[in-house]
Image (cartoon, rainbow, N blue to C red; front, side, top):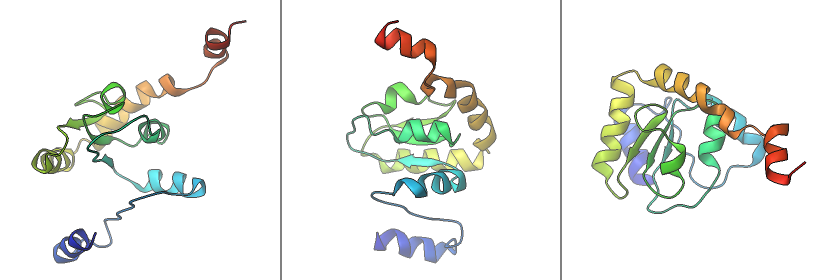
Length: 131
């Protein structure tokens, strides 16, 4: 973390960057996702963590490694970017593309179209549990 903190300070962007690594209590979730321009998920491997679903709930685009459930949940080049795991160059290029091409609003628009996937409805309940 010190390496990143030093780079952030060197670039003079301390007021614009928050690194939140590790567990966040439930009461912090809305604030963190609403404040974020993008959710970065840089995992070597992953299972269903629930973070992409939360990002959809708060309409926060995602840049993630193409591991685990990320592949099924993130629509590459529409709701975010999927990059190869353990490839920091690809991750940095995806982050740079997101900001330089101003993809915040287009990705948010696509996420809004897909948020229904994660909504729990009576129809889904009946399908899951039966009537």
